[in-house]
Length: 159
Image (cartoon, rainbow, N blue to C red; front, top):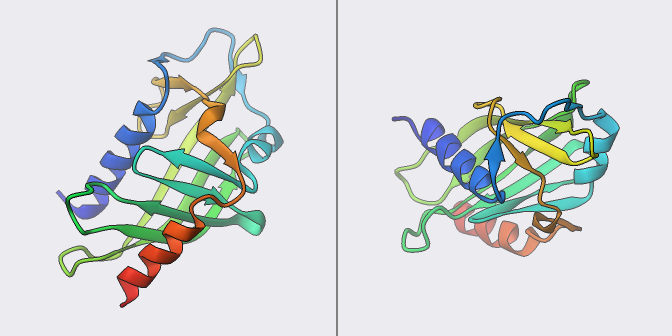
């Protein structure tokens, strides 16, 4: 399996596991307004179980990932993010890894956002549009909380 597929699978599984529970698309849910999705992420960090992502102004995207604390291979990425007219959040970036056995990989990942009849935001990974998770606001923090780790990993990768 290519590193690209492994990383997408690992990121997707980890991000989906951060939600309290999942189910099919809630009855009556409609696509989130793009501006609502932008407001959720702009200038904030989405904390993942093994890293996180920062959704900066001007579409600036940064993220870090440490799949296994016992493995010295860590990664960082720079790229762009955007929200589609249907309320789907996407990033496109190049992941850079420590270790000679892992090559840089270009990845695109997206999450569809819908709003249920009670105003609850749900999201699903683009690989499984029928698996929705309630958006956990505790996983999203104001500011760039990954910056120190990003700088550390970038230095490690480029040394």
